[in-house]
Image (cartoon, rainbow, N blue to C red):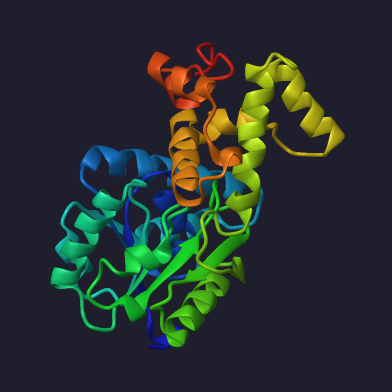
Length: 289
C-alpha cells in the first residue's frame, strides 16, 4: 500500500490523544472516521478539536473556511464496522491490554487483509500487541505526544512481526500529517518516556521526602533547566492516575526500582486527587473554570 492511495483514515478512540490525531489527519486532507463507545465522548472530542482549530485560526495559520473544511472531513460512529473499508487505522483507546485486545478482535472481524493498524500506546509492548491481531505484519506503533496538534514528534516503533513496508508507511504518514518521526526499538517507554517517566517519579519522591515544595520543585526545573512546565505540573496535566499506571507497567517489565511508583501517587489516587481533570492533584484547580 502506498500513502498516495490512502484518502481516508480511521481513529479508534476519541479521548485527548484520539481527538488530536483526528484533527491533524483532517488538517492534512484525510477524511477521518472516528469510533468510540458513546456520543458523549465524541461530544467532548469535537469540542476539543473545534477549540484547537479556533486557536490556530486566531494565529493566522489557517482561515475560518479551512477550519470548517477540516471539521467537515471528520465523522463519528459508535460502530466499529464503519472502519471496514478504511486502509489505515490509528488506535488510541485506554492503556489496558485487555481493552485493546477486544478492540482489535472487532477490527479483525471487519477490516480487509491490507489494513494497517497504528497503535498510539505509550507503555505496552508493540510486539505483544501485534500478536493479538490476525495480520501482525501490518501492525506498528506510532506514539504521538499531547497535545498532538502542537507536539511535532512521533515515535515509530516496529514490532518484531512488523513488515518493512508497514514501518515505511508509518514514517510517510507521520510526515504527511506534519510530524517529525524517529524510529526506535520496541522497548518499554521507547525513547521519550524511557527518559521522562523516571524524571517525573523522582520529582514525586523529592516531594514525598520533603526535600522541597511542589511549587519549588517545578520552579527549579522551569528556571534551572528551561523546562516549559514543571514535572508535577505536567503530572497533574497528564493525570496522576495515568502516571501511576504507566510507571507500574515499566516496573513490571524491567523490575528496576527507579520505575517503581512512589506511595504518594497511590495515596493521591485513593483520595481522588488525580490532577486537573479532578480539580485537585499536586495543585488545587478548584477555582478554575
